[in-house]
Length: 377
Image 1: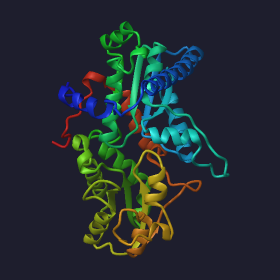
Image 2 (image 1 turned 180 degrees about the vertical axis):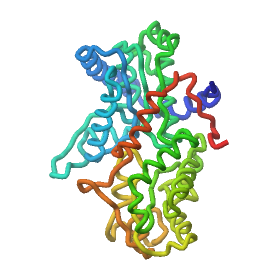
Image 3 (image 1 turned 135 degrees about the horizontal axis):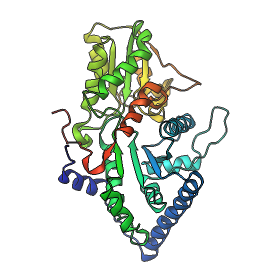
Image 4 (image 1 turned 120 degrees about the horizontal axis):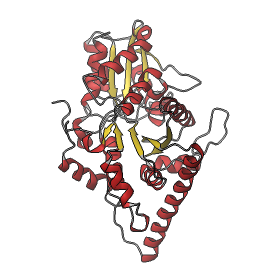
């Protein structure tokens, strides 16, 4: 079985885990440590209470980048429920890797469709992993809810490695004997992102998307908007998954396209060029989010309507202009399908969600979870 190469892990540990040092007083440092300890304690009590009530000995930790949108919170709730049904022997937890999303969700940045302010408390993977360890679960599954095995997935791997190395802060060490037992028993497992395997996952996701949107693509064209990584952050060279997915979809119907908001050479302007190369100069164009949830990118970068999404002096090509306005001004009848006033994310598509669930069921012991820097080779 292939292994994660040690130099990759070392690089990720430096890139994603190392603290940023700034000038501060001893009091500031102590306050920071106290806050971290307090955060651990909150999570320890929360997780211990759930374990005591459920009496289960297996934990599943779902790790998402995060969101501040209430429809996204509901999508995470449904995902958690689906995992609880698929893993009845396990307690399931959801964490966010984005500090900004965590803080804004806690502050209630967005409201629900009735105008009620919605506040949600999500936590970083390190806090929940620590709490899961403190509760002494005997088997732990960590499932990445990322779409591609790129920059954000590397952060997930780094969080788990940090947990296994028991090195967050000196005053919050876990039981070394327990952590050693996890390693000796091969009891901590890593579930890979949605489009991990180009030979298995890409065609399966293409199949599921085509089953949902075949009627749309028969009326015109369908374009999916993923996130993507800028070239300098294209960890594991994972951007190629978008190209591979487009190829798999176009094998079913040539009017499918896959672009991103951040991948150089695969932005909305590039999607338009590929459409016109195929003679698709007008007609209906359906837009869908190729992201785990429909958050800011889906609502604003993809579906944003009005002059505020088409007023930049560098229009039409400027990145601030939404896909909806860009393609509308390019001559297409642009349509963003919604459910309860919102676009759907991939976690809300049962057939696609099942790919993630299968990844968890097939998860490997962390030391055997392979991902080279060049998965396309």
